[in-house]
Length: 578
Ligand code: FAD
Image (tube, rainbow, N blue to C red; front, side, top):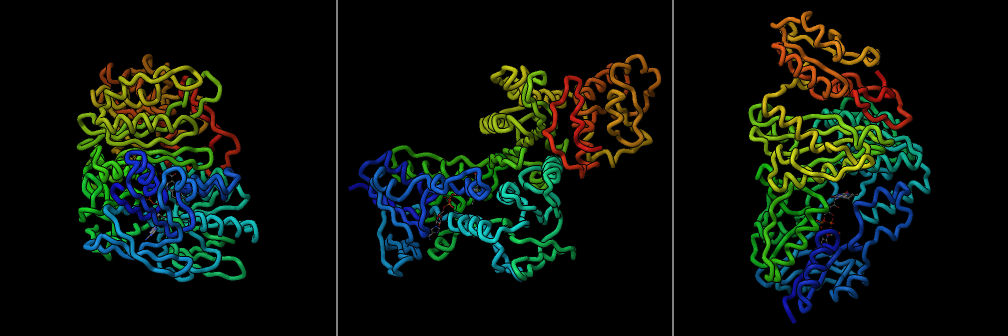
């Protein structure tokens, strides 16, 4: 018999570690303890089963204990909670949840993959019978049967993170009217405010009521209805409430056994994922990891890192292929109704929190592009924000769009992982045919814009800088077509269509700094170049009127159709309100 490896926690990290252990070593003795009934289930799929997209409950059960035992010759014990670790003895104490029996189990190596638990702060009324959290199969069953039995008409989601918004969509799919309450001024914390505004507009277009910058102060339950009193004093009522306000690592076991942890209870591991004890390793949501970009310690609860760590830890314990975990860059993606929202690396909020300053430490390229060639049917708009340092190194990106967001974020995530620079995004030769992309892929495009900024070929004003400009020196210059201006324009802008700009240059003043803007920033850049080349001062409005509109003129119009692609001239979809 080989090494005896005991695993605590049987889902993402734990089940992966088990499989890798067996694949590498046929002789290891492997025992896995899971306190719940299920192992290796698809927690990421739970909202879609509630919403009905995943029809069969069994589809969530990726592997059963029997499958794992048969396939991997491992001892899998469900309903078994590990309650203590005795490091000196190298034993754990296990409680059989069904019988109450408590027993000891020895190990040569122990892997903790105990995951995390949704936060339930002590807010008055939080224990009301129609307030739910979603984390595992029993939670899912409870929510699903509540919907089937009680037929709620409306729901309040507390917390606008990815699970909250996935639930918003799925409950909406079930015919419920949905409200989202979020303490921050934006949903989807991994993305920056201007990107989140696109999501806000989309949620509103689907009839979702958004309560931003407002927290819950109490829940009052009566006759099947919960009234949430918000910190602002406003209130919102729902037949059911989903709490999705964050998680905490399941670090109690580690704490009791004296393993070194951070302030949040995250277990501290070395680059081989070993804890402060020689024979105990830890992976997944419960550990602190290094932020791949900033090289600081953080916690990133995502399935991809947990799975990778499961593989690495097995290799390291078996000692055959020692591997380092090189950090987490937080690549994530979520479907929010028709939108896809994705990010990788660092966002601007984090850079600012770390004391980094725009144009001193980092720069931004913000573009609106089509998912594929505009002339081929079905192209849809996409917004990309790229953050890069002053040497051009890619720091992070966020993409919001309807189609092809996943592959673009993965390309940028890959570039970031290989310490890529803006010039690498330009060089990437990506697959192109009209149904899929453009000859200059959106990733190339954002690279071009960033490169132009780095070379000083163009300069830009961000949406947020518009309010700070000294308009005795700056002049907004709308260079769109007359028809576009009818949709809406920025106050106090003068209008010279791009194709008339050269002939009307003499009307402009060489001491004024012009801020040309178009629909999306592309023609604005052309105008910027014409002006500069002719001795005028100019800075392009990044993202053009599209970004301006989403930041300053959020629409309340319910959009029934999908947006249209940007046309070759940059004319944007006109279905969204003024
Ligand atoms: P888990 O997979 O949570 O497994 C931990 C297990 O340990 C649990 O089953 C728990 O019962 C068990 N356990 C804990 N303590 C003990 C103990 N003392 N004894 C025995 N057993 C114990 N991530 C993404 O990247 N993309 C997504 O789209 C995504 N969607 C998600 C949707 C939902 C609804 C949820 C809940 C999570 C989602 N995640 C997603 C997050 C992802 O599932 C987690 O990051 C990942 O599962 C973490 O893996 P883990 O092994 O650390 O913990």
